[in-house]
Length: 149
Image (cartoon, rainbow, N blue to C red; front, side, top):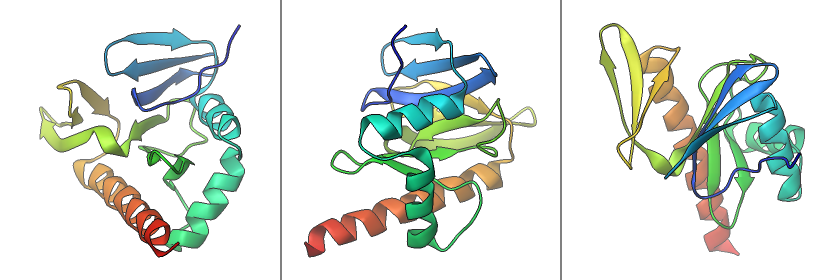
């Protein structure tokens, strides 16, 4: 069975359990037989690094230590951020470039994506906004460094 690697069409990687992850792309959704962490690790390796290497890079760039966004691939600014701890099998990863806004409704938090899809989050609006800010900062630092080359 082929492994899934995130790409520019990937909006979200939603961990369901230790054997299944829901992939949300711009025009389709499907299930893969891996944990969300494994999807993210495989994707990093596909693009020449590893999840651990990407986290280490984010840690050094941001000076933070937990729930770090990662640069899966630099040239197309593929940056994903986790909604909960990446070790949590139900962790959801969101592509920064697809985020439109965050809102609350009926005591639940949602991320509205640029194509109109919504992702329900198991976190507060403030927590999700903090993750978006952190990922945006990582993107800014990355683009700053690209410009200096």
